[in-house]
Image 1 (cartoon, rainbow, N blue to C red):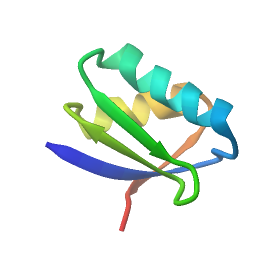
Image 2 (cartoon, rainbow, N blue to C red; image 1 turned 120 degrees about the vertical axis):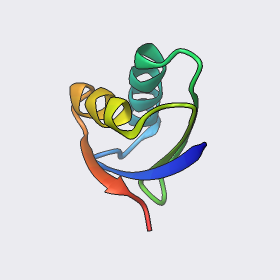
Image 3 (cartoon, rainbow, N blue to C red; image 1 turned 60 degrees about the vertical axis):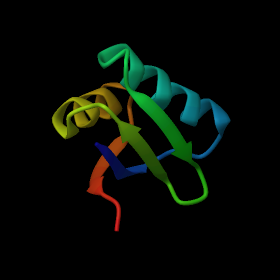
Image 4 (cartoon, rainbow, N blue to C red; image 1 turned 180 degrees about the vertical axis):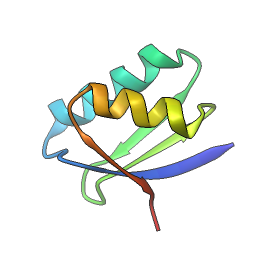
Length: 67
């Protein structure tokens, strides 16, 4: 299952890399793709609660499902 979440506070490639690494550290099998322009992250293969915790632990604001 693939979900798209809004993540506030991402402003550069380094931010995108941090979010990607945090999610993949929590769920190594997750497929993660960040869209900086839209401030979203597409995640396949990870539970929303795990994604939320990983994003917040990385210092960003998890704003829930995009849409």
